[in-house]
Length: 350
Image (tube, rainbow, N blue to C red; front, side, top):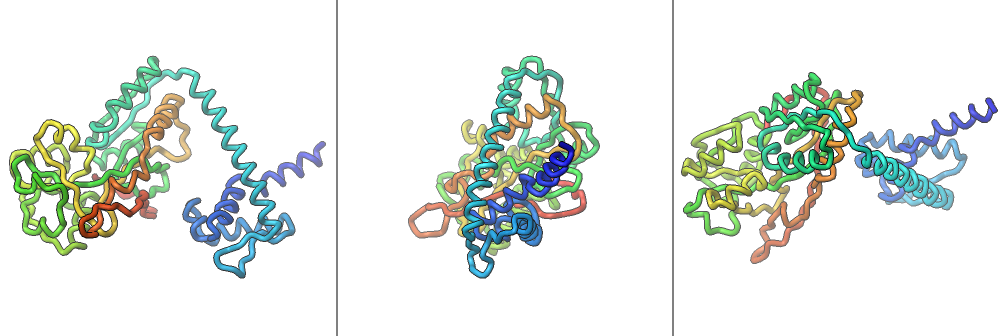
């Protein structure tokens, strides 16, 4: 019995599910580099995983002499079997989660959120969550972006919502939403009747901008530079609500995340105009963060799951990009949140 146990543990270590998934992704994508990116590991690590599986099995799984990579007959058999194992494991996890989700939770989860994300997304989600979990409470603090990261780092809150996420060694970063950015103008502005605006049309326009140094400001500045556009910045703020009010009274136009304007557009205070773009879409990525290697409370886990159920990290192309093809508005670019690998805990500020 002891001998069997020792063999089983060794076998289990050699066949970690992460290794099987990496192998399956290499086989599916026919590429070490693409599979490595999908699993957030280096290309050499992905190659080493497959090599270790081959050494353990005593069989070559991939024909590396061909490009793209091709499965050998042994690799095909192993790939089909691994897909089944991973599928069964996913089904098992889903069944356990479904059972766990049926058990009511109580307690309080504290969340820190940047203003615009919290005000425009969280109110409805919190209301629905508390209706389904009447013994649970969600306490949300709307904070300046740099304070959100600090609150999570110092464990003042369990969850945070930020924009333009990076990688921080102390945190788990979960892509949540991608928001298209549009031109915001007051009702009555000469652009207000336009259904589409060319970036070049913004040259010399008075702008109500985000403060310098904010990630969203840098993204907008890069976009305008790419199109050779210089604007006249009349005012700058760190708060979307303040920017909207300044635009409304005619202090200038602005570029803002489209969802943050929904109420203003409905009321007629502002007009939202898509920006023509034949390159990388101008978007604001949002993410959820929490401490790594710190167990979340049951209520925080449940609320995090509820938030992830609302994720939209790959929205339909029509919401992202309008190409410069004549007389058409076909939209072609797909976008994922791109997290810059940064070993320092840089403070996000938008």
